[in-house]
Image (cartoon, rainbow, N blue to C red; front, side, top):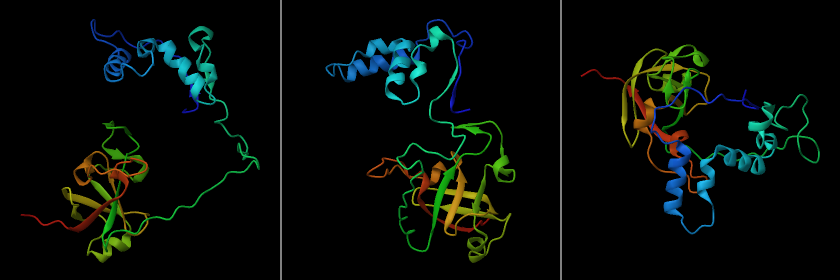
Length: 217
């Protein structure tokens, strides 16, 4: 589905007087970068956006005239019916990168999305990918649970330097020891605003946390 470009009929009728996103973004760009030499106003036309994508992104050439040709298409070079890759040897190249050590003897939190979720929009309260777990579930290796006096289905408190999640349900899951998996955006209270110095990726995938049994007040 992600390799096939479909035609759109434009969707439902919009409210009168509401400006398209292309107009808003290009006007902001014109104000911030008036001397950069780019004709931002031209990008208020969707055709200009499509033509730029067709020139820049390999495999998207057919997007340039899709409004005229009215022809849906597969992105070139994305579908592999046989294990041959676009390298000189025709084979995939893998690079192994060492992972940083986990801080202290604690745990490292990774936040994820569920099956019934698109970005921050949640369509289903349970996750079909992970045994119908609910949104307040936290998944750990069974050995990590046992080391903290917990078992599958117990309630616990997950804490980081940025916040707390109290009363979560811990689940034994096939995950690397030392790792914790929780749902985004519920676990946002635990993640900070730091970014990786090179990739600028936020710390959603590597937040030091601690876990302890939940104590009722």
